[in-house]
Length: 202
Image (cartoon, rainbow, N blue to C red; front, top):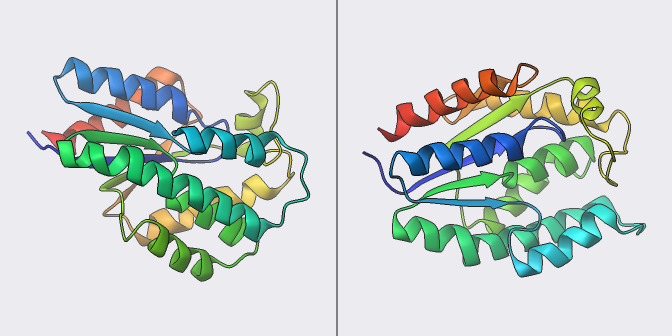
């Protein structure tokens, strides 16, 4: 049985990351894995303060500044949560990681994909998930599931661009990424999620 494993959920807003991450955490704990679950932005005390700025505050923030705030949140999460958990031998489940910055700000925000990739390599000290599950869904379906949209979700066609950026990244790194159709029922999606994860852990 494999120990010390880092997996992430990626996808556009409303794709079901939190629901699937919680279900996966419980399913792995039921199988006696030691599990740490974190999320971005907001998985640490610093992250919660940054989340308020990033998601809710009406600030005229440049997209490059946005990248840097997400980067600060991510680094704190790595130092405070992810690395200690991996050192303990945990399975770490992350909702979003560096790939989100590449897709949202790098590609969709025109900050530059390679530019953000270089920055994220520095921020993460080269930490890359062992597995990334992309919950793929049409933005029109995902946003219809949400009752109130945050500052980033309100950017109109941005999510179409983000979705395709994720799919392009997945196509280029098939050894790490698995694309899962998230437009189906929660149970159907979770069946695929659990199968993919257990295949690598057991």
